[in-house]
Length: 481
Image (cartoon, rainbow, N blue to C red; front, side):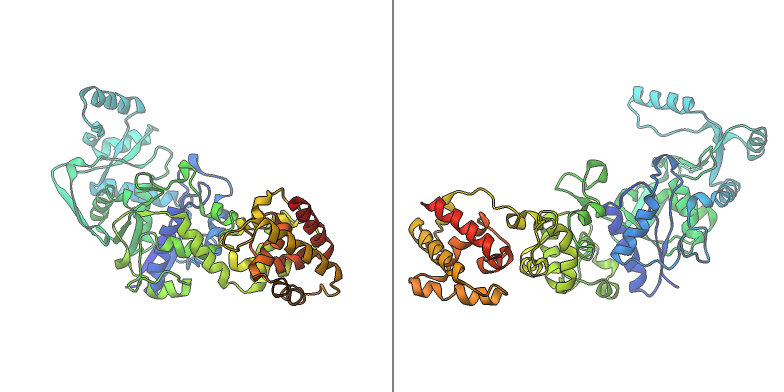
């Protein structure tokens, strides 16, 4: 049997991390087995629909390398792939399910539901709607419908039974049917609820593997009752553990936690984000951590998914992103970093060389502006910065180094390359009886006004230019007195 999985997002805004992880796992389940990956848009909840969100879904999938085999934009043999275009299909199968005894027509008003809810609250009993419409015959219900009476379709559940299923991650799950509520399957506007649409669509699209968050474990027995009523095969279930922001709180876009788009805007590479997210709840047999998408397609297996919640560790993502940045070809990093550099540098400098200097020292692209802003304007700094215990610099040593550097730079005729400046500068420490750091640290301090910079004194001197270096070294000399 061909493995077929589906990603079925709702167009409600940006792609949050949990949704993207589900999409990645669904894609990898299919591709690791040589199967098909289907995109289906679940837009029946019109109140939550966000204009432009479908475009975000397509753009995100393209950015992370998820290529679907069927979907709204490319078609396929099981369309339409947008739920709002399948309204007649849901009506057809809702009516069939009623005939099969797995559902019934309900004419209850919101007021009737609210009255039952209040009674449950007063008696301290958990609310579970007891629908009197279950006792209405199908013939009578159809007459009322033909007379224009407003109705919904609710699931019918025999309370005297048990339903069970096997989940790849959580094992065997068994539930007494008396604990299940008879939820609405088809709303009064003719649109399906999530619970019903997914069952119908997954069957009609031949979906073999369903991956979703473990919050749906409690609803799965109700899905299975529908599958059984229809006489359909039940798919393989893979319920995923939650992604947590800490030990007690789930990662959630409702709480303002970062979406995929947020992370990209902050300067994380899509490839690194994907790599990290895949590891939130899954691990390879050999404990490998850095994967390309091609590698994941070969090695991914659902047996590697853990039951335990995964904690989103931004520091681990930063580290992984840094690994990806350092592996980029210089030309690609330059193109990615140029907009970030030009946020704070407006003078004409060698941006390509600056990019080469900072690439080994940057973990996230948004670190670039603060790391290099000294090139545009020398910040205010304290003379104590010249005193460095590790470098063994003092105020006297720093003054000597700057005075000699000033004289050296004034007489230099070749400022054409980092190598030329390096050769001129590096003869000075031995001449002055200083270690390299004792000579270069004061220069770097004078040129940057910072304790930490993404590159050394010689590269910075080249980027600033001869005249700017002299100006800044003179400021340093004046500070030291």
